[in-house]
Image (cartoon, rainbow, N blue to C red; front, top):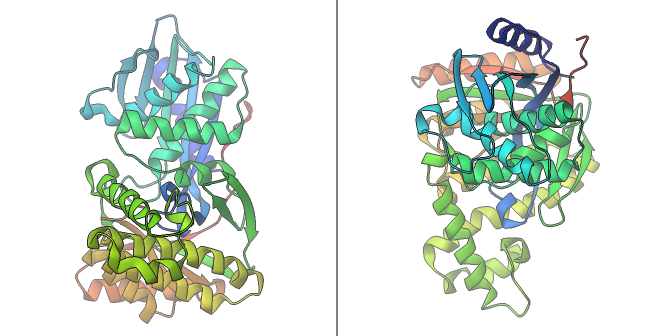
Length: 391
């Protein structure tokens, strides 16, 4: 399942801009992080789902060397050398995601040059739905199709992560890229970022997600994201010195061990670790709750997750807190910020029969607090794909 409207628009813009139809077209979805906040780079586990919004990427051949790239939403075009490791100017930061992917594909002997490219997405920028990862994954899929090459899906995710780390300047984990690649229809993706294994977890038929966007833009590369990562690494190192088993990452510290030793390590590092270790614990317990259909208890984990985001990890903000409380008051089973934080969106889990009324109630309650949010029902969707040429 992909956003057919976005695909048609992207192909039309490409054809209008370059005078020829694309020969390779791909689509990759955004994601919502359901549970497991900031656990990926701590070698933990997450629940996420690909969504019914994403990016389309088009490629056709060109007589000119290099890559011409058009951002379809703003109709801006830039050119770059895909063999260069230098970042492009921040004024065209959107091109760095694409350039980074093309550069790292060259390390896999997958080379592309003399091409015209266009991308277009339906994911609101800065909404915390991983527009950047969707663009990176869509780029990789389109290049592979254009060159007739293949690459393991996990390798695509790792390569896209490297592009974001080194070209966009955000030291992110693999959650976003894996969600975009391994998405499943009406299901969650359980990802283990130590083994890099993923498996689908089906959702009950009567459950859907809401995405509530208070329209606070965030850019992880400009947020305290990287600082939080350093704090987590410090906590793992200090806890490792206190425990009688190896600690490579916070994944290796149980909740009970953390509670015993938290007062013996750096206070700020302990504060950040509280959220991450709690999240890893909630994800693993959440697997069992979904298996037994205990949706109310699973939903409470989302509320618990947001609370430690707010108090321990401090990656929430006043607007997101208002939305989560509105979701609670409106009868959602659970709600929390989704993604890196410091802006973005809130994800809520609700019964399908209540979704419309709950949406309306959340918006009403938020407006009473001065916000003007939008809310959409999210359909858990399949992962990245190549679009057939007759589409």
